[in-house]
Length: 306
Ligand SMILES: C[S@@+](CC[C@H](N)C(=O)[O-])C[C@H]1O[C@@H](n2cnc3c(N)ncnc32)[C@H](O)[C@@H]1O
Image 1 (tube, rainbow, N blue to C red):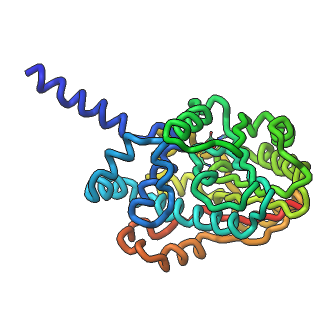
Image 2 (image 1 turned 135 degrees about the horizontal axis):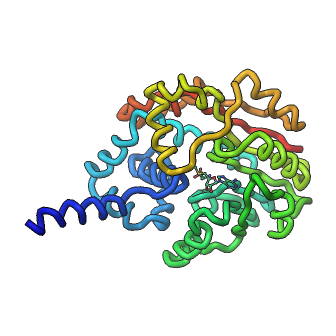
Image 3 (image 1 turned 30 degrees about the horizontal axis):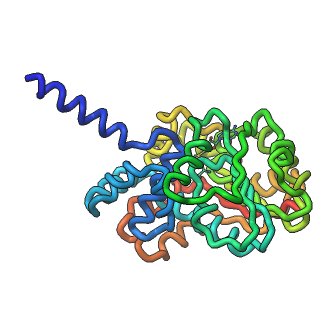
């Protein structure tokens, strides 16, 4: 009788431990699981969630159960296409001695998984109160024998602080070109915070500096979108984490949005182009429920800052 009551309680507590606890962890963990089916290359992030990784990748059927639960939100195709876009551009732009600033880094693993030229310095910026992610990452990397040399972790709140001041304090060199990456963050901010931050990035950006970043369509914030099955499932998951979306731009206004900040659009990958890339990639045919990346609201940009 006692066992009958205790067993489900223990099982549900254990199961909770095996679920990601924040959006930063959730997106990184889905990418990690997608690496197990060959779509991405985020094996190294196992060190950030060793027990969850051990459990969910223990057998192909457990792994597929996890990924099946994510399906229908467009999250898999969205995380894949945005990772491919950012990695492709980062790798083609980076030269020795350049700097990479990862804004709202969460569990980003690029400093460890990309083959960057020698001398490239990484700056990982994130909310200080975001449950101790920066300290946790450094500690886990050390525990698994991975060095954090060449990576500077800095706290920032884009709604309140100037990125140029934070970077200067952290030893960023404004004479060297910088690639800024702002992945999965603008949708949690507001227009003013984004505009101020981009202007501040330009202040410390030497010629040859770029920003990689996405904008979500303002459609995501409408009542119609919340009723759209492909968007509502994702919305619910994000809202459950207490980090609801707050910002979007209508696609036809996106070019003006950037040029008003004196930023030049080098490439704009729209949702149709992302879908095309997803459909053409080997291994995606198993996950057809996810064929439209994030329900078609994500626009990816390569922007020249200076
Ligand atoms: C969905 S996660 C994305 C994390 C990471 N860029 C990735 O794609 O894996 C959103 C990140 O934005 C950060 N963030 C949200 N609002 C922020 C703010 N006002 N200032 C700084 N970081 C913020 C969170 O702390 C979190 O790490």
